Length: 138
Image (cartoon, rainbow, N blue to C red; front, top):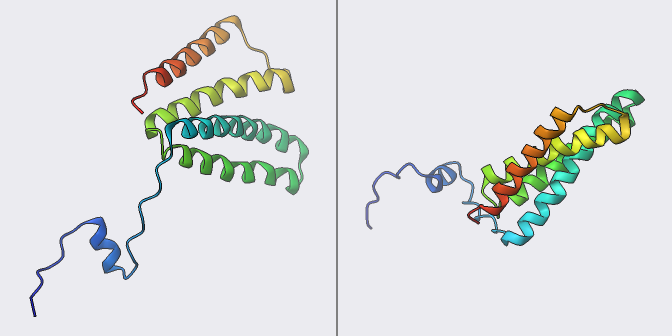
């Protein structure tokens, strides 16, 4: 019988030491599908943020549960999109477009006011997101 040396410290070793099997690598998403999922995540992010303000005005547990549920859906979609898009790129697009979308949604739904200077900076965010998408490596 061959003697085995001590295990090396690796992810594989850590899972085996714990007695659990090594989990399979998550399936990588096709880049086009990842961008579609990210777009859905952005819309969910916008709805989530706007639902926070709405739920606060309702004052019921049912209304308070809407942003909680949307939060889980939102994070799940973002995580899924990151299987096909680098994390930094996905997060930059998600937060940038989400922020602009929430500002626009707040203007439409809640009458929030936005100055011309703020609108200009929102346009810069959109330019940054478009540049991030156009020059993404995957």
